[in-house]
Image 1 (cartoon, rainbow, N blue to C red):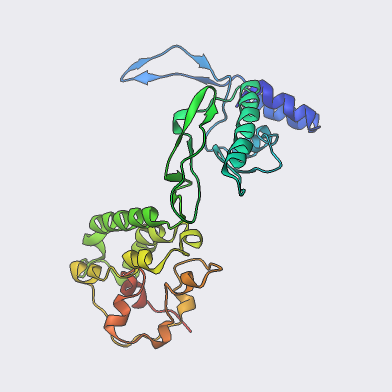
Image 2: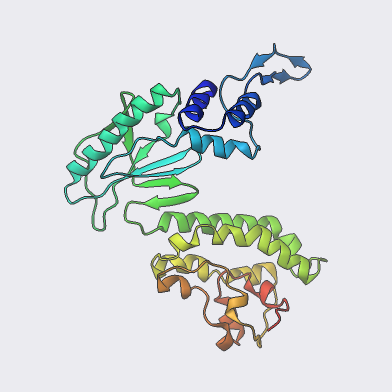
Length: 298
């Protein structure tokens, strides 16, 4: 973020003079030094960027990017420095041309406001329900071609061209089991920790892996969801006990955010009718027995 450019935008947006001065003093005359072992570099001045961890920084970045290039047929998605442009249409060539027009405007805007972008980390993807289609031409940014891919990663989600989320679910299953191997000595039956502490570990370490982004990928096909839902081997490998008689409301245990699709609601069956050990093992995730044993008041 160019400091002088930000000051200019604050003036154009008619921010109060006192607030502009506060922000100017907050950003200017900041220094830095590099250290290697006991050797220090010369002192330098920060002419761009904002301090990490400051509550001011996100607001200043939003102000700096408020005039991000727009197009009538293109939607822009901005989250901090992660950006995406989306367009839809019947004719693919016209859709890609609309995106290219946006990229041309974006190139001018980035140059004018001194914002650097790594084209190598930029990717293009075609979302299509059936089959695979080759793009009619390349998208370019700063004279570099943007690579066409079948799967993109945006905000931690692996999004494939057919929106099946198979790649992301495979990634979740692998990451989930990796966390289990790290935490098995703490949440297993031989662990000296109390049940309450095991539940806390589960909620803090294992649960976020599966629940992140669930309102989006929760609409995936049942065949893909089974990779997460039916990992009942976790019980035997971690020596976790299961109870035959559990009475608890599903609303007290719901681990996934609600989705407009009924597929997400099917992930956690109504536990009022689930009383057998085999039924408990089918719950998502299979560490559910840890949570089920915790007391949840009616």
